[in-house]
Image 1 (cartoon, rainbow over the protein chains, first blue to last red):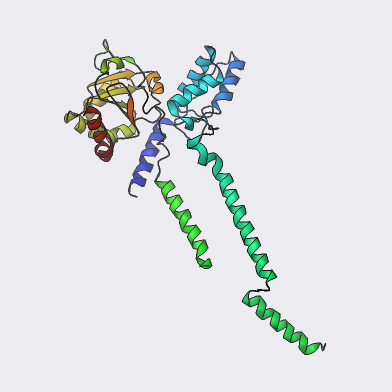
Image 2 (cartoon, rainbow over the protein chains, first blue to last red):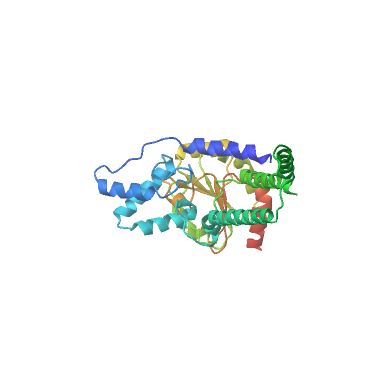
Length: 159
Length: 173
């Protein structure tokens, strides 16, 4: 556990060293291309500032990668080819919309599995409760209250 | 029994969160493991007139360490690399990433030079091919030029002894 403060310290310096803001030079003379760059890079994760997309990030590496995307688009590469180029280097983690495969099974199916588990638990609880009520089984407190009420009523209202 | 159920759920959550805290989100599994190391031909840091190509390193097991004089975390691992290079177990090659030549030379003079040769990746393009995103990064490349190990962040004595050295001995063996 002693490694956590160290790791945090290292992380801080790594981020501090690299997440220094710098404006990305954009190709203002070609808004169509620039739109395509922004659209594609906002689907890609910046690995330096992990919770930012490449489009949002001003980290040095993000700027280099945006330049790379731009020059590959100029060279006529398709979006899918550029996405593959990124995945080959940085893995599925660069994609904000990772593909469904064995290593991402838990990621995609996990929430639905949890939902199913919750529904099964709820169904079991409801079924169990209904059965107990039908069998006339009441919790001890309810039983005592019911008996007290019955006693009180029998005193004031003759049947 | 029923009374302890919330406590049980709580404990499971605590375990999950504790494990999650201990994980390093920067350690993203590299898709490059087992793949050929991307080829490069780059000018040497010490002798800018000469280049070094990855082809020349085929046939031996070697380490590639990505470093820069501006990289704070590199200082943390540097003494370990210097010490390791003295043992001559594995040639360590440096990829001087997005750095100025003068700064890099001054940094090596000050902190020691563990590298057989350092090459200059001034525009970071070779770095991109190697999937570098958090300097320092360290790769172990085998005789056939395949990447067998990648470390993102500083190399520690523990990692060197428990992961890198056993792998290197197996690869060299």
